[in-house]
Length: 139
Image: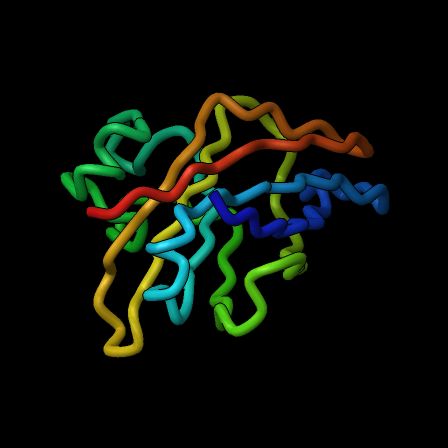
């Protein structure tokens, strides 16, 4: 497994100036990593606007997509996968709360999603650091 570290700095949206840090450690099979050209990283709220709860299962099977209009995207970044070791990105203005989801789509050079990964039940607290692991699997 090849490990890619994405540090997501999340500023709590509660009017606080205190930054909250969420570090996502992305693990990709070495053979798959050679095919990945870019990744979309999403931090999502726990439910859609129609009240349906999100789960990693529904995201990983692409039953629900992170870009669906009902999904609450708290933060998003597009990452070029040219330096697989130690890449970091900064996302801001994500409100603190329970049951956050970090979801990743990995794309090849044609822009086709070839792999994805997800972790859920993340508690983001204002002024605290959180570290999560996200394993990315071929679709």
